[in-house]
Length: 209
Ligand code: URA
Image (tube, rainbow, N blue to C red; front, side, top):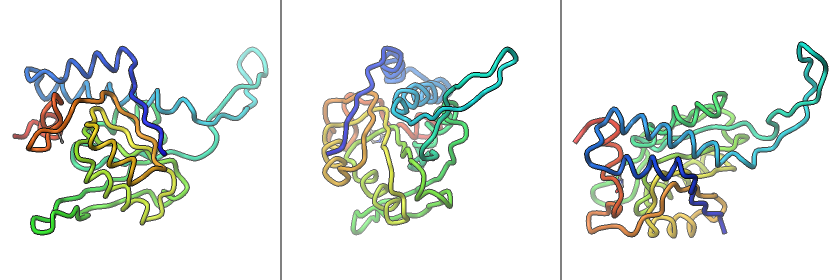
């Protein structure tokens, strides 16, 4: 079963509480989503492998550490996931960025892929799939399956706020994908919004309504 980690760093908790307020406007909301993504990325990359590297400083030679193992990629689920990309790249600037977009078929209610562009070597990379809100889990489960079908083998999923219903569904569908959560909320309402949540993350990031 996958690992579920709620990232309880005080800065992450503080910033999430701040952006929940309906009084926070788009500019500030977007900036703080980026900051939260950076902090979460920092925490979620604690287990990356290191190797020794010889360095000549201006003073002497030494053995330092550098990242080894798989290269990284970030894949936002469109549209709200875009709000987390820059924050992730602040921490892992050499990561490549793919994109995946899904819409719900109005007749079958099944998620349908409308856009997917991934790094050509995504099958060899550790891919961080990001979406600020894990609500029902439907689009996330479908996105991860689409990425697996395109050859992605190693994925982690990161969201800022999750509902228990979405976490359960995601764990059942993709037990191999570790889940990083900023805050685990209470439940979904009848419109499938997370309660207490922060409203529609995409609308708040992009100033649409
Ligand atoms: N997506 C959002 O942006 N917010 C929710 O509460 C649920 C899904």
